[in-house]
Image (cartoon, rainbow, N blue to C red; front, side, top):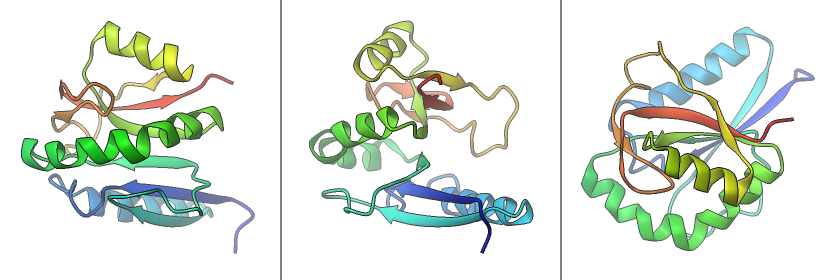
Length: 149
């Protein structure tokens, strides 16, 4: 076992897998292993977040409108405050963003998180459209949210 460990939460793994996101998680695990970093992936779906939720990265995949509409209620009922807490603890969230300044400012206001990375060049799956995790509006790609240190 390595001294370096990374705990990844794959949120809605069972419904948001339109662009091979389960494969993206497996690729992330393999690349971490090549670098001598142990990883643990917890797959979280509908309902309350498990008590074992000390995650370093929260990954939210992409889905079609139907799937995304199914999970919106769950996201706001069970996950919204938890996601804010994860950001407060220094976690990273890789998720879709609608690209608007208004949403970016609301995220910053409510969580003190900012967009840390907007991939300009990425694999095809990361650049697939989806819906913003915060506003529910259409999104062109995923970005990395976190607080500045």
